[in-house]
Image (cartoon, rainbow, N blue to C red; front, side):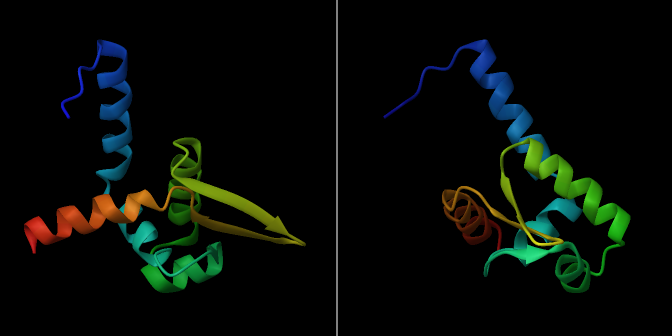
Length: 96
């Protein structure tokens, strides 16, 4: 089935892919493939600086790619729409 998209829809899709096009954000998403993590766990997994991770987590959350949950004093992040795994798998199979 082919989709006919209007200009606003195309712009929204382009913005979504723009968020996904940054290497540090892909590292963060990769770290969350096996479930939710807090900032410290993401920093440890990715090797990125804490301030950098926090900035990218904010962008990914605003883009509705990640979901943020507070448990006591800890904040956990997880991938909101598991269909993102299908997209990543399709791209990886094509490129790797």
